[in-house]
Length: 160
Image 1: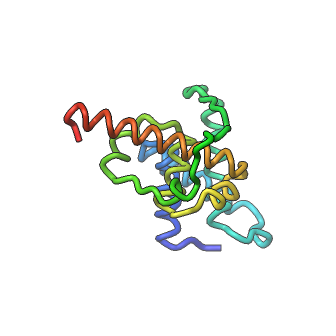
Image 2: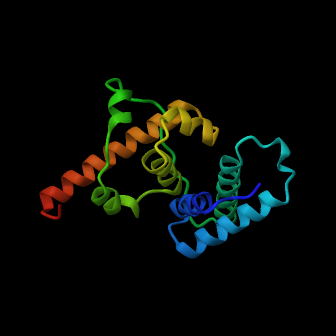
């Protein structure tokens, strides 16, 4: 399997969404590709998704090893008034996303990347990450609440 320029750029952007640093993203993408190329890929149906999974696993392995970032624990229950369609149809403008991007945990950045950049649905993200759909929906809901709160605070402070 060979990767075209767009696939490699997409992998880099995905790694950047996890690491937040260009050099770390390049290292992560390189390591993931190197690991993929040592495998027998004849049984792999979706090479791009597989390489992303390798990158994701490498990132979290490195993170656990370094113990740099605390793991944030949240309840996976959704509020009573939760509207999935409204969440799926939400649009986050670039300014707002940039303003809060630095405050997000890697798992949150990953979900935002897959949802906002790759255009995946919550079900597709859940399948891609191997997590329950409800977990992804709850994470997206919390992110939407945070974005709305941060945007309102910026507007009230006169920064928006």
